[in-house]
Length: 152
Image (tube, rainbow, N blue to C red; front, side, top):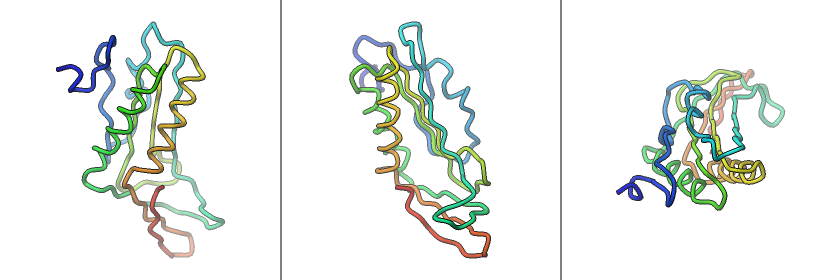
C-alpha cells in the first residue's frame, strides 16, 4: 500500500507535504522540513519569484491561474523526480492567484546523498514544471497593458 501512496523501495514514506498548487503563501522552511534525513548530505532548493520586468517591459503585478488538474501534473513530476537514480526526496509547490513583485511563485527542493544528484534532479524538476504544468499568468505592465502568458 505504501507504494500506491508514493512510497519508495527501501525508503520510508516521505514526511514532506504533497506537491501543491494553491493560493497560499509559500513557506520554504515548512516545505523542506523533514526532506533531508541523516542519509542525505545535499539539499538543493529553487525559488521562482515574480520579477519586475519581462522582455524589456516593466511588470507591476500578475495573476497566475492553473488548470483544475494542475496538482495531478505537479504530483506526477515530483514522483518522477523522486524516482530518479540517487535522488532521495523531492517537493514542489506553485502559487496561483494575485501576486506582487518579489512574491514567491514557485518553490522546489530535492535531497540526495550527493550534491551533483541533488542539483541535477532539482534542475530537471524545475525544467519539467516549466514544460508541463498547465499554469498561465496575466502580466500587468506599467503602461496599463495586460498580457496572458503560458508559463512554459
